[in-house]
View: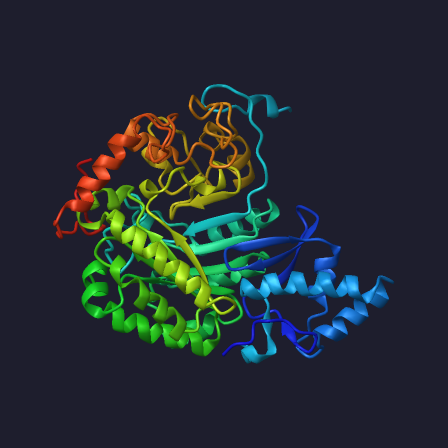
Length: 100
Length: 378
C-alpha cells in the first residue's frame, strides 16, 4: 500500500516527470507535470525547492519557519495542505512510494 | 507598426492574443494502426511534405520563446519518425516539457533507452483490454501484445506513464479492467476519453456511439475507482459530449492556450480547424510561429467572445466554455458561429441527441478504418 497521508515524519520528493521550471516569458515559477502547469507563489516554490528526498516534512517546516520568521503552526498548516494536495494529484511522492 | 488594430475576429471585433501554454506537434500522419476514430484529418499529409528535424528544432525554440511550456509529440505515430530521438532532444533543449503520445508500436527497448532523459512522460494509448478488442479496433494484428511489451520497457526505463483509454460503445463496458490494467502498470494517471465524433470518428458514429446507460455506468465506475485509488492514481474522465448539459471548453478557448502543428508545418487552433470552410491557415515555412499565433486570421477568428450570438453572447458561462467546439457547430449546425449543439441551450440540441441515441441503438459493427491511401472524393 502506497503511503499517501502526510505526517511530519514523511519524506517527500518530486517524482520523475514532475519538475520545477523557470517560466522566463511570464516571469513566474511553475511546477510542470503531465498535462499540468501550476503557477507557484513564493511559498509553494520554497516548499518544493526543499524537497530533497531525505529531509522529513517536519524538518522542512522548521527550516521554513526559521527562514520566514513565522510561527511553526502556521507554516505547518501551509506545508501540509499544499503537499497533501499535490500528493493526491500524484505530483509529489512520499518515500514509501519507493522513489519511483 | 501597430498591428494590434489589425487583429480582429471573424466578424471584425477587436481581439487580443495571450500566451500559449501547450503545443501539439503532429510529427507525422504515418501510423501502423488504423483506429476508426483517429483525430487526424481525413485528408492525411504525405511523408514528402513532413517538416525536417531541423525545422521541428527551430519550431520548438520559437514555441518556448513564446511561452509554450508543454510539447506533446504526437502523430500519427511519432515513433514512425526515425529521427524521434533528435526531435525529442531538440524539444528538451528548447526547455520544453516533453510528452510522448504513442501507441507503442514502433518503439523498441533500445529506442526507449535513447529517449531516457529527453522525454518527461509517456502517454500510451489503449484500444481495448485484450487482443480481440484492441487488434480489431486498431486494425493491426498483434498490436495489443506488442503494446503490453512496450509498456514493460517504458516502465523499466522509468518513464511515468499515463494510460490513454479511448472508449466507445464497443469497449466501454470493460472500463473496470482498463483501470485495473493501469494499476498493474503502476500508472499515475489514466485518461478515459470518449471518442470525439469528428473526422474519421464521424464516419463511425453507428458502431462507436456509446449508449446513455453505458455512460452512466462508466461514471459510477470512475467515481468508485477515484475513491479507491485516491493518492495512487488520478483518473481523468471525458464523457461523451452529448451526455453533458454544457459543452466542453474546447482547447481552453480558441487561440487562447494551445496550438497544433500538422506534419507539414500548418499551424492550427485545433486539430479539426480545417473542417471550417473559409479559415485561412499558415505554415511555419511562411511565417514565424509568434506572428501566426498573434496575427493569423484563423487564430483570431474565434478569439474572445465578440463573435458570439445568442444564447452564448449573454450566457454566464460564455468565458467558461467559450460556446464550446466551433468544429462541432460547423458539423451539426452548419454554422461555425453557432452555439455548440451539445449545449442544452442550443436549438440544435434535441436533434443532436436524437441522432446520437439513434446511432447508439444501432447494432452496426462495421468499422471504417483510417487509411492513408484513401481515395480523395470529399
